[in-house]
Image (cartoon, rainbow, N blue to C red; front, top):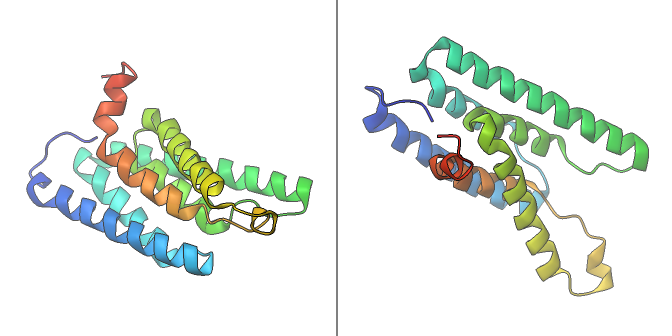
Length: 166
């Protein structure tokens, strides 16, 4: 997380509010329509950049490059999976959201983000699948990514110290 800056008294609460609002929108829209609007990913992208901006151009640039690299990697995995199975496993909104999350989070915390999102989705799938007919239905991943982003961002200092990186 960036160091204390003169913007902290108002910037961090605004970013937290933006993150919570975007998460609520993602949960509603992705569960209902199976899509994450580009406008929400764009709002989160600008928030992630604003989060690192007080640290300077280099820190902001590193965060953006990390997000771009993660986006490219996940997009490549999506493409390989699609070609191998003939099905799309992750939607492009999910891929964009994962890339944006990589901007918000320090890289050391990113695996915890992916783990918690996957764990939440698995628990949801296990607890909501009651019949064979529902076994093959699509489950949106965006709500779990969004919730995981909020929790991981809020507790990143704790995660870093648990990993022994502080």
